[in-house]
Every structure is written in C-alpha cells, then in structure tokens.
Length: 450
Image 1 (cartoon, rainbow, N blue to C red):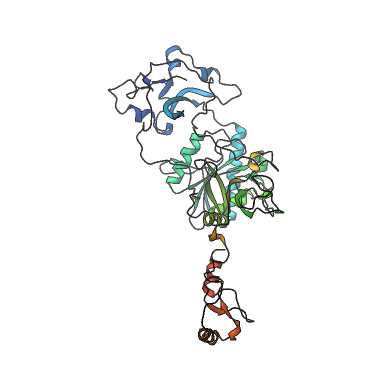
Image 2 (image 1 turned 90 degrees about the vertical axis):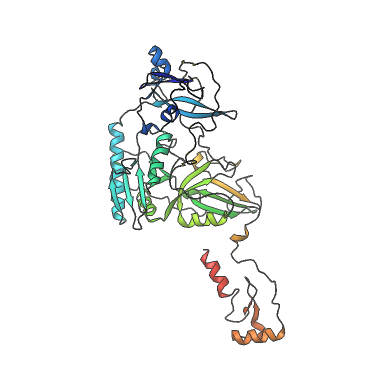
C-alpha cells in the first residue's frame, strides 16, 4: 500500500511516514486530512499513482466480486507488531441504491411508521437533526420522550458510516437502531442493530408477521450441575459453576417467541427493550451489541455489579475526547512510494478491530454463529448478591429467657413460636400458624430485587 497521497486542493504530495508530512510549512495539514469524510471534500485526497500515472489498482478492479473502491482516499491508523502508522485506504465507490433496494427501504419506513402509530408513538420519516448531521429513516418518539432513530440501509453501508451516523445520533439524544437483512453486514455489533429476513417490498409493506432473526436476546443463568437441562458450554457436560449468557429466543429454556419488528418499534420506544453493549469475558476490548428486555439488563447489572461490564449503549463508541491527531503514531521517515498496492494484502478498510464472533463449545454447537450464547460469563460460585435471602448473621436466636418472653408479648405469639429472622436474626414469629421466615424489612429488600 502506498505511503503517500495527493492533496487535490493544494496540489501537493503528502508523505505519511514523516511527522511534518513532507510539508513543514503547513502545521495544520494533518488535522485537515484526517478529518471525517463527511466534514471535508470527499475528493480531497487522491491515490498517488493515479495522480502521477493515471492508473489506480482499486479503480481497475471495480466491478469484480468484492466491494468496489474509488481512487479517493481516507487516512486511518494501522497497528502491526505494536507499531501504529498512518495508512491510506480507498473509499468505497458511491453508487445510488437500486430501485429494488429503495423500494424495500421505503416499505420498511412505512411499516415502522404504521407500528409506531399503533403503539401510540410519534414518528417522523426521513428526519435530520442537529443541522442535518443526525440522519434517520424514521424517528420514533415514545410516550416518555425516548427517541429511537431507525436506519434501514438495504444498500451497502461501511462500518465507518455506521459509527459516524450512530455517534451523531447519540450526540443529539437519539438511540440508533440499524436494520439489515444481511448476516454479514458491517453494522452488526458496531451499533444497536436487528436482522430481519430478506423479503420483497410487498411482504415488508404488508401486515404479515416480520420476525427479528438476530439482534434481540434474553438473559439465561443456570447452575451447571449433572442432569441440568442445558449442557455445560465449556466442556459439554457439567462443571458445577454458574453460567450467565445472552441467547436467541429459540435457544432459551424454556423457549421464547421471536420478537416481531412491529413489537420492537413499540417496545424500544417505551424502554421495554433496551440496547446493551456487553464485553466478552475472553476479551474485554471486544463487545457484543443487542436489544434485551429491561428486566434482563437490570439482572445482568446486578450480577456483575462492580465486575467491570458496562451495559449502557447510547450509540457507537466515541473513544477518548480530544486526542492529538497523531497521538501514538510512529514515523519511519521513508522515501515516498507512489505504487498503489490495493488488493495485495488481506486488509480490512476502516476497521482495525474486526468483530469477533463468539466461540462455539465442543458439543451441541449450532452451525450458525449467531445461534451461540453471546458474552458467556462463568462464576466459580454464585455471587452472594444473587442469593434470594440475605446472608444470615446468626444461626440461632441468641436471647435470654426474659428477652424471649418479652418478644412473645410484643409479637402476640406463643413463646415457643419465637425464632430468628432468616435475614437479620432479630426475633420474629417464625414457627407459629402466622409465622414467616424473615421479617418485613428483609422480605421487602428481597422483593425489590425481583
């Protein structure tokens, strides 16, 4: 890949291996050329070989099996062996959506708007908030004011576009929700998403059921014992530990019905289904994104209180605020190399951290990766905070005979019925006809956790 680009406005060649880019007289040049594409001229940077010789490998390969690329460039970081450098990548070739893709997008817009109206939500089609930066296909506002920005890009979309639009939506108080019919779409796990079947526009616009096939999951927790209904995801048998993971509805025990698109419209706007980004236990830097019931989200937060995973997902990763444009960059100070080597390397454009699919267990593995448990976490023991009854501070009632008689008088019960609260150990009517296992405050704390 070339280590330089051509600046079409200034008419200069830029060397990406030098700290001053080969132009010490232009101190603001780096910030200008590394700005997001939507904030600068798309044709600002050109393939250097195309400028010099009128030939670009990416342009010549257009029309093949892969995604077509243009001769216009975009700069990004690339880390190899712990060393981070600037690299120039070809921007995708812009093509307007086909008539079929546009028809399906409009049909889904109509369906979302119809569902929003049926659920008592306000909706706006084709809105642009924040001066046009936050663009949505349908903006649905729930009864409580929660705003969900639906995006249905049936035409191909890049990961960088997903991040940029999701970030803009989150900055304007909108929760993005991307819909795709492609199981390998770049938007999956990079923003709140949902996958549906690949249907013609007539079926999308109809009132026939339209299920969400992936992107909505439910929390499953179980003690892994011999004879458990679900085999151990680690060894296929049992391990005696506590497993917690997110499963598709059909793989829950007992199974749950799939979420319909119309249901997702109302539930997301009402806050009944919420977006989550869950770090994977094997790699905390990698996250899985999904829509989950609010009660499951609360249960997850309770399970991992203080353990690190952050369940909030307002949109896309924004990264640290205000870093220097070249923070962490290494400059080799090489001679300018104008050769375009597009396609020579297995190189993922605009995505230095590709999505990591969850690993399948050794047994009972489903052939499709989306069917596996996501963010599976395992505890050696059940966390104390998950126990139904708080830890008992005393095993027996430690009182004198006089104190026991006094407690029986206050509790209006027989002296033999006085016993310790299972939670705090205070004297209660425990063994009588009206007896309970715990005092009212301890029972209230338990009920508040359910």
